[in-house]
Length: 279
Image (cartoon, rainbow, N blue to C red):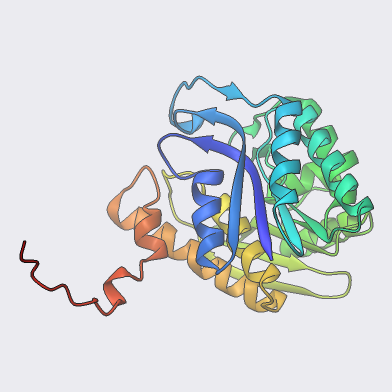
């Protein structure tokens, strides 16, 4: 199983592919980035120029990378700059499936949140609702995005389950919704299938850093695609993100320290002895 991650790229910081790729790799899977747009940093940290990948170029990159993958693959689709990018990706996906390829679409419909509202062109919301959600196997919105896609207000976990099932009726098998309020002090991450629902709640924390939603979707996607049962994948993904949040809050970081959070095996390796070289 290999992933292609279709998301944004920042030069500094850990959002989009900058966090999705190392997180997917940490789950034990190969993951290859196709960048939809290049920013110097997350626009939420201040004004930032951007360079958008042309939809035809993006489709060509996806096609070539997919042709190099043997066996099943997953396209993890996150932040898009324009709807044409999404339509091009879906066309590549359809062509691959027509050729008998096993390629799943895991969709993180990035377009807004409770703080900023919709921060992309509104035409992208229509693309997600009408085109991407029906084609997806898994959909991973935050509370605001789920409310917008479903047309239902979400104030409680029960509301989130009902709205998620509305999306499931259009095609996906699972919906993972994040940032659902539980009172004033906690947030819930809720995984919904056609017949069941599971919840992981975490304390609400003030957070300067961006990208925790991208980390959550990548971690859950990688663990699920790698064979972990959905409930276990939910629990492990939420635990990882919670660790990142706690680290950011403890150190007052404006960016996640992804290398620290994901850890490294270098310190655990037994060194290969080096002998003096006489020349």
